[in-house]
Amino acid sequence: MRVEVAAPPGRKLADEMKRLGLLDDDELADELERAERELRAAQAQRAATVTAVQERIEAKGYRLSGATETVAAITVTSNRTASRLMDASMTVCERPVVWQALAEGRIDAGRADVIAGGLDEIEGADRDRLEAKALEYADSHTTFQTRRYVTRLLVDHDPKRAEREQEKRRAKAWDRRHIGAFGRAYGMADLFGYVPAGTANLLLQALDEIARTYDDDRTLEQKRVDALEQILAEKVHVDVHVDVVIPADTLAKLRDGGASVDGFGPVYAEHARWLALQDDARWQRLITEPLHGTVINRSTKAYRIPDAMKEFVRARDRHCRFPGCATPARRTDTDHVIPHPRGETTAANLAAASRGHHRVKTHSGWKVRSGPDGALIWTSPLGTEHTTWPYNYDDPVD
Image (cartoon, rainbow, N blue to C red; front, side, top):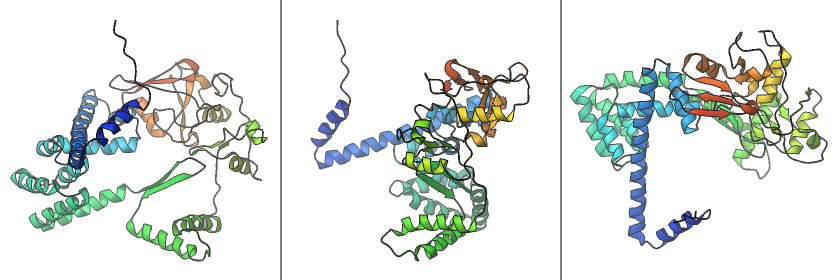
């Protein structure tokens, strides 16, 4: 009998690095080119598969959002990323010649999207001709350079049409503007956005004007952060709601772990104590069961969900319970898992759901059922299952 023995962790990488280290310069360069071609071929396969998923779910009669959520859940990514992936995949797959260039490794997914999407308003033989030119150019130029080249092709082909197309794209870009944030380690967060260039320039000028008044050795980027805090403290007067979770023993300085800020993740214990002890802080005691660290249940027979129960569900879940969604619970609906009146108004039958995912459950082919230990088991229109659990206060990670 043959017994397979698994390689120890890291052994496979060590063997691969040893193999690569034995290659000469030309062979190593060839290896990188081969790896890049394989990656591009995989991108082509992914584009075709994502497009097939979208067509399959639409054929079942479900909304587009059902496909977006399915792609996001299977690829373990955000809805925004999944939506962009679906758009790019459909665009490339509508142009077989562009898809073939991607599958052969001549171009990557970024350049494929620029060519297929940039020429989507041109039809017939004209599009075939311009597409061939763009693909030839893209073989040896970056995505940024290819985008400029495609724009020049459009202008040379039909200046008036190109101008109209630019206006349409500007309007589409305007509709995509946004600002958001997501948590990082050590009590920090990434602030991101897609804003008009004038707004971005005005913001940086305002921050730099204040930053220049700070006479110390900090970098300009660090001073800009402090300048933003100063502007908010001096100019903005709004009621700010911050949910801080801090274990009783951490608050009492018996240990330093387990503290977090809702929507942003773990923070230093000392910072959490400072937030919790502010003069206007409002406290809520949560009792968790010892095995899984989840908040203990409550119930009512009424359809209308009492405010106290909503607070309980938000505290238990901390964020939307749809797979991959990190929308803080305070910005979600409190939704019946089994619809009322068939399902009771109990905390066990309620879950935090963002407004979009509330609609997805109702209209887009997704099904949900309760599992053991407070789990929610979500089934996509393709039949794949994805499980989420209540927040674990004994082992906080988000």
